[in-house]
Length: 397
Image (tube, rainbow, N blue to C red; front, side):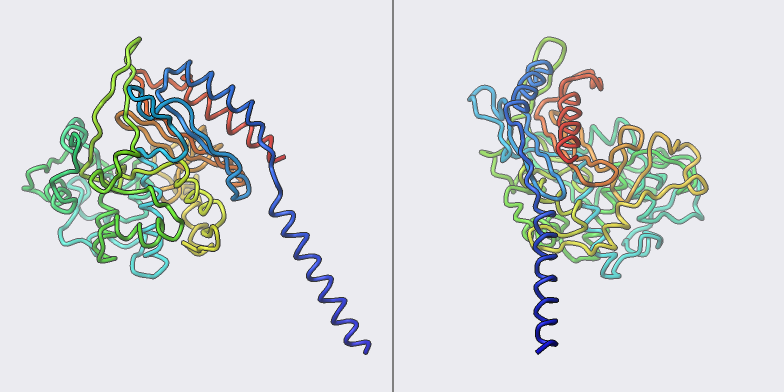
């Protein structure tokens, strides 16, 4: 009888502790919607953005989402949290998750020579005996260069997807004799010893994912990320996107603003994703909750930790990197002098941010379908992001 009583008491205590823990983890945050509305409207007007939408995530829970302004100014279509637009370099975080899933499954190694996985050789002519790895690619230290102006001029296609397959383009870019090849496609440094942001390298990582998974990156991402997380309005190609949901894109130059056409890019793994604040918030919540969201596990906790761990130290870093200013995870970056983590994106007609504090307890996403000609840090878009982040951190306290 005493044993039964002890078992009952122990079970009751365990259930009570579990319920209390659940209550603590499900803390409700009351958002001051009026305050956010007033701040968003003020900065929307100050920056002359056509539209803007954002979300706040606290402890892995989405506590606020809303849009302001227009997805289509001419037809007065509102910009909402469900409006779709290309998110530029935030795309790399999905490419990174796809890559890390294959690492988790031991189908890829971050430190193997990438030529292990390619049907052609990628060799830096300035350091021909040095291997290039996926870790170097994911930390922008691979020595692979976005040759300007070729890379920007030749990889964008107005109102359509790129007609040149990703693998063909990369072969022509990196293999001597290729129609896009130049020694200027590489930096004059050993791989791993020089930091420079590289979009083309992310394109190469995406192609490796396709080779090893046996699927297009868009299909692989759909199966392991988008479908499990319910990202129904996310796609990698213009041809697969519902244009009725897609924002029009705008460019502000001095005192004028004009619409620019939609476009596709050849190296879609580096910036081709089209999604909404609502969809991306599911993805970001998963990253902040160590690989799981709404009962769906996308990556193991250890894999997420590896992805988010800053890779460079004082004894192991590119010579030109100042660790007080920046560091890199695996397609996971620092911002604002290593005070924020995540990724941002900027491309023709778009600006996006998806960032968290160093403790990964608070996250903020912000989209706009407007690009300006000066890109100054003081414009209203960034001031709005800073205001939302500061508010979220105060709410968390």
